[in-house]
Structures are given as C-alpha cells and as structure tokens.
Amino acid sequence: MTTTRDGRPALTDRVPAWSLALTSILCVQLGAALSIGLFTQVGPAGAAWLRLVAGGVIFLLIARPRLRSYTLRELRTPILLGVVTGVMTVCFLEAIDRIPLGTTVAIEFLGPLTVGVLRSPSRRTAVWPVLAFTGVLALTQPWTGSIDGIGVLFALAAGTGWGLYILLTQHVGDRFAGIEGLAISIPVAALTAAVAGVPQAWGNITVHVVVVSVALALLMPVIPFTLELLALRRLTAAAFGTLMALEPAIGTLWGIVLLSQVPDALQALGVALVVIAGVGAERAGHRDPGDHARFESPGTA
Image (tube, rainbow, N blue to C red):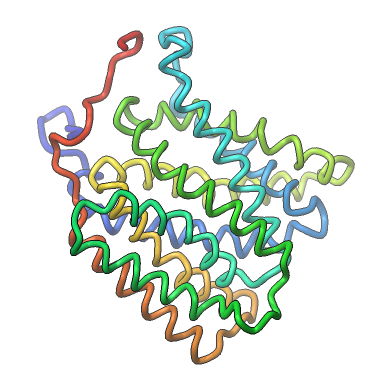
C-alpha cells in the first residue's frame, strides 16, 4: 500500500478499485471516439503513433525512470508491455475506422474475457465471463454477416493485445514503484506504433494535429494506463479482465453521443448483460494484499 508522508494511505488506495477502472474506461472510449477526427489527416495508425509519442513524453517528464539502475532482465517485462501496447493501440484505431466503436470494443473484449476464464479463482466467478460473452454476441450479432471482416480482424488482434496487456500491466505494477514502469513501456509503445504510424502520418503533421494529439494522449494513454496500473495492484487479473466488460457499454454510449452510432434492441440487451457481468466480477475479485510482490528497488532481482 502506498502511504503519504504522515503515514496515511495514499488517495489512490482510499478510492475503490472499481472506480479507478471505470474512470479509465470512460477516458479510453472518449479518447477513441475523438481520435476518429484525426483519421482523415494522419490515418488511424498515425493517430495511434502521435498519441503514444505525446504520452511517452509526458510519462518521461513526470517519472524520469532511472534505466541504468535496472538490469536487462528487469526491463524485459515493461519493454514487452510497450510492444504489446503499441500493436494493440494501432489495431484498435484501425478497427474503429472500419466498424462502430461499440462493436469494436465488444469484439476486443474477447481478450480480457479469455483472461477472466483462464484466471478465474473459483467456479462461481466463471459465471461472469459466460454472461459477458453472451452480451458480446448480442452486441456483435455475427450471424447477420454485415460486419467488415478486416475491421473484425483488427479488433480481434487488439483483443489479444488487451488480454496480454492486463497480465503484463499487473506484473509491471507489482514490481515498479509509482508509474516508472509506464514511463518505460509507453515510449517503447510509441516506437512500435511508428512502424505503421509514421508512413500514414508523414507529411500531414501540423501544429493543430500535434496539439490535438497531446490532448488525446491525456485521455489515452496517460490517465487510463495510470489508473489501470493502480487498479491492477488491488484486483485479480480475472476480476479486472471481466470488469473491462463495461468497455462495450461505455464505447456504445460514446458512439451514440459523439458518432451517432445507435444500437438496436438486441445490442442494448448486450450492453446490459456486460454491465451486470462487470459489476459481478468486481464484487468477487479484489486481490489479497499478500498475493503480489512488493515493489522492488532498482537493481534487485
């Protein structure tokens, strides 16, 4: 537990873990909806790259990680997290360029859903991934055959990254104090996204694009990744993964408000199912303080 100078628990430890995750979800999906405005100028991958570059700079300025104090072995996980984050972000924005935001998030949720199933601590909690999967099916309606296949593939790739992101973020959060792990991983994510992002954005980067990218970087990755790292220190990976079932609901909400992507009745039912699953997972999934490692000081194995 993080404490203040007077010995009291830090504010982030006094705030319920579920509220940290919910705030993160709101920021991620709002940032995704607003990022669509950049696609015509720099492309989806270009928007992902610019957001991650801005986010990486912000994290470096705040945390100033002491890279020389860590061994290569210790840096492997945050570096891998950065690669996964870069691929996940590019694939997600490429997907929402082709299919509705709520639908994309619902398909992408299959990644955290898999984490929830594989890491479920008991048979009783297994009911929540099942219920969430039913909601995902109602949201995506794969039997209609009207969905963009390339968009679905991008969403599935993003979902794979999302599942790995949950596991790796929990590992990094347990072993690096504060946000130092993110200050290492997000610049790596920016370098990874540059492979697809630079060709799309090159020649179209203006002052306006840079300013918007910095603002969007606060919504994703700076605020949500920080909150998710803090939440994952207090939730099991299974609970956090299923709690992310709220993402399709929030994505659908922002899709309605900002993008005029209105769901039908069956999709609305799917939203309700994933919300119920997310709440159920949060109630059952707090981590035992003894279940995770304490922060390791630089240079320790």
